[in-house]
Length: 200
Image 1 (cartoon, helix red, strand yellow):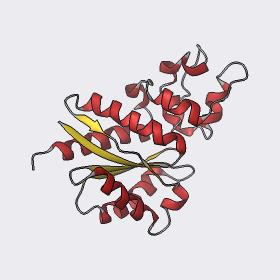
Image 2 (cartoon, one colour):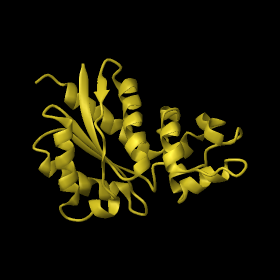
Image 3 (cartoon, helix red, strand yellow):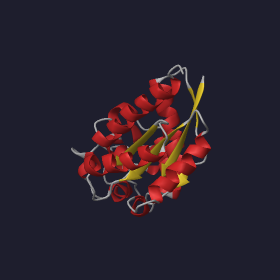
Image 4 (tube, rainbow, N blue to C red):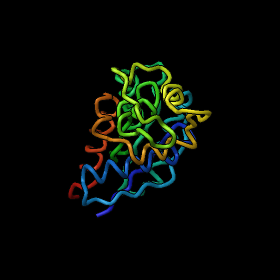
């Protein structure tokens, strides 16, 4: 069985990284379900908080998902609290979804915080150091990209468009669940897949 989840994401790097990540999550959560992920729709968080912008992106994503598909909105929280902003955005997305499955997840500070939570699994990957260890509180780091760059020996620095999708394809997702916002993504994917595979 195959299901479709169309994504609304923030940056150019997430256009490639997020579909790869949610396909991995789908395979881990429900191995018998094939996941189809159309080209994501980009929506900067600064626009998502404006009236009408998120709604427009969700409607567009629903068209890409098809009648039986769902939508995942995945943005960076930056300085906002995910537990406060995500429910507001979810209510707005659900209001235009017409009963179709939809989820909204905000990465605490930024997507890369999840790589920090699973840092040990990324040792030696794409120039990252062999001794890398996760910080005590990955989601408290207010510069995950810079944290990664500091652990790339030599002149290399972390570039989302160069590194994000590659790291998203291999990081330890179970280890990353120690980051509450990634655990939220995991649980929301479980819910979406359950809703999309439920008998009509």
